Length: 401
Ligand code: HEM
Image 1: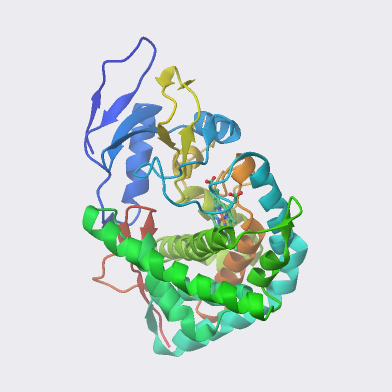
Image 2: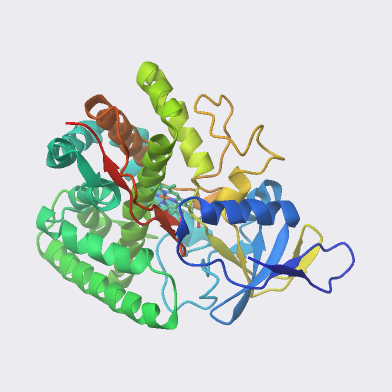
């Protein structure tokens, strides 16, 4: 990663990213690059698919920008697509319609609703463990991390379990592939298939409602009107991205960490009451979500003028590892007491599924370690990390049986 100083207005410390952050790297490297960028400058410019964007690297600027939603809008949420032809709901809504959708969705994942799901989360994770425990090894990302939130999602959406493999394949194509002109075609085709799948599902639930999320949204009204079918589809697409892949990616980082640092694992085995704070610390340290915003008007961040219409990328890991905000920000401290991280975002779009996400993580982490307390990365295997939305591509683990 090389940067050059730009000719800047006085007081604006912006630098330019000369090459894009490379595609596949050893695990942890994408985040380490962001750490280096943060210490060199609070603001960068970069190019994605021919569009210039800004990148912010420090907690104070990132938090304030997410909270200033009238200027930092959700009209576009990726730098390569400043004028997107799609609109994920509620992620890409702003203003009163966004508030109305949040009011509709909040009860679905409230602490009370998540409490009722606890038993089924345990049942689903028992099935996952049953499928691998006796083998003595697994490829963790595909056999555990992607599978577990996938089956939970199938249950919530009222989808048949047989379709879980198909969902996993779509997820890998759409979210785990670097954005190049060639891959974008494949990603677009996969997205069309997902849309086709959900369109059929919406028709079925209209004809015969069930006790699931789609039927709930179909029966709902916003401003006294039923929700248009296109908007329900746009909601299903966001759920596909927000609910499935996030938990999978977080689980992969957590297990990679504990396989790499056995001293942390041993402490958690001896003091299981530390699991909740350890999970918060993993959320802080391995914050892979990198949302962007589109400027509704000219503005200024850290003394740098920015133009209306441009996209600003604000990686949450940049904020969450900022030493200006956290003591020993570059260390994983599993019993960290004060941990005001932004792994679930900030401002009006803060994650609606954070209670469910935390419960899924706690279920998986505690149940795995009760059954498979000691494990290691298979010697000689690499742990690659993909770019785009950062995440571990494969993690080969083994244990004694
Ligand atoms: C470890 C797991 C998860 C992480 C780290 C995570 C993180 C995030 C972040 C950072 C945002 C804000 C995006 C932005 O500001 O543009 C977000 C939004 C959202 N998340 Fe999550 N999420 C997780 C799991 C889930 C789950 C399990 C669900 C639901 C089943 C969910 C549902 C949503 C929804 C609906 C939004 C959009 C909220 C809005 O636009 O108002 N998330 N998530």
